Image (cartoon, rainbow, N blue to C red):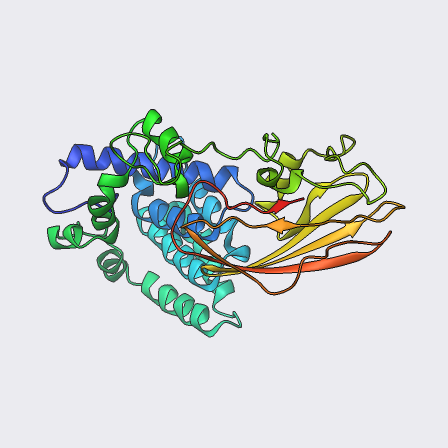
Length: 337
C-alpha cells in the first residue's frame, strides 16, 4: 500500500521516486541473495513486476526476469503464483525482449503437478495471445483509496503505540534497559528498587551468582564449592547464546565439568525448551539449582525437576514451557548455580 500509493497522497513525481527506489531495492536483494526469505521473495516479485519499468535502462528486461526466475524452484506455492504473474507483467511491458523466455517458462509450468500453478500457466498463456486483453488485465495497480489508508493496521498500530515508542537513540537505549524492553516516558523510573536494569550480556558475568544465568555453575562436591569459570578453550557463552538465537538445538554453556545444551521448539507464542545437563568430568557435580526469575512479558512453566546432582558421565533433562505475552528486548534469564 505504501509503495503503490494512495489517491490523495504523494505527488506523481514523489510517488514514482518511491516506487523506483522500492523496485531497485527489490532487484538488489533478489540478485544478491542466494536464498532470500519467502516473504521478501513475494514482496520483491510484486515490486519488480509492478514497477520494474522504473528501473535504470542498464537493467535489461531479461535481467529483471532472471532475478525472478532464479528463485522459482525454492518458493512456496503462493510465492510461485506471484512470480508467475510478475513474469507476465514484465512480458507485457517488454514483449519483444521476453516473449521467448516467458513463453517457455509458462509452457513448462502448464505441465506442473500443482493444479493451481498449472491452471494459472494455461490461463496466462491464453491471455498472452490477446495483446489488448493482456494490457487491460495487467495494467498497473491503481492507487488505494484514502479509506484503506485510514484502516491500515500498521498505521493504526503506530498511532496507538506512539506514546510508548522510542524515537531517539537515547530513548531506545532507555527502552532496552527497562523491564520488558518498553519505553517509559518521564524518566528511568521502574518498578522495584527504582534502578534501571542493565541489558544482560551473556558474555559478561555479573557480581551475583544467581543473576549470571548459564555462566554460573558449581564444581563437583569434592571441590571447595567456589564458582567455576567457563571453559576458555571453546566459544564464549555469548557466542553460544547468539548461535542459539538462530539454531533450534545447541550448546549454551560449557566448562570442564558441566555442559548445558538446549533444544527449542516454537508454535506461535508458545515455546518448549529442553535443557540437557551433562556431567563431562570424572567427579560428581552436586548442589545444582536453577532459578527462572519472573518477567512481565513471558509466562514460564516447568514440567520436570532440575537434577540436584550428576554422577560422572550422567545426563538429565529439565523441561520448560514459555509463552510470550508481548514483544520484548531484554531476554528472560535461566540462572544456574
